[in-house]
Length: 165
Image 1 (cartoon, rainbow, N blue to C red):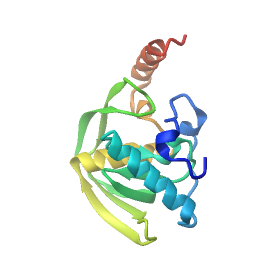
Image 2: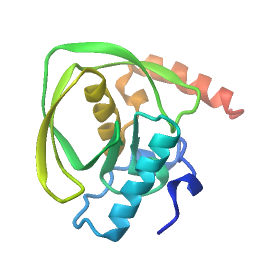
Image 3: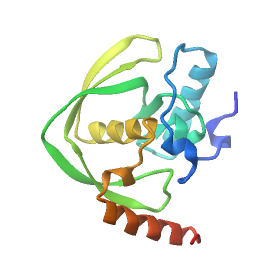
Image 4: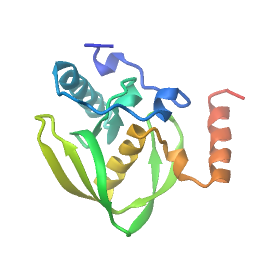
């Protein structure tokens, strides 16, 4: 999919295996990576999307866009004990919303588009979005945050909404 604008790529929907497989670290920020980041920012801006992970567009790269910022190889290095529950949606689960409990504040380390290591404290909505997208990069979805019986119920409801058994 090299050079294909994200608008031309399809958003990957669950249960595609790329969504449950950890992504690969970015070793070099070359033109292909820069193009992917530009494409991801473009679609996020076009559709007013808060965040998107590279594997959601079929690329197994550890890159996410959250509120217009590119995070390359992001990792959460600290989380607050203060948590809250928020209703989340996901591009890879169209039409499904799930209540997820997440840390209110996180400390995240990542590479910028220029290749600089940055550590940043995120709060509230920014923290939620980055946690959700990092989960994608780790091969997790918001369903993995639920108790098993809730996960089964929502999974059945989601499959039924897609016309699957």
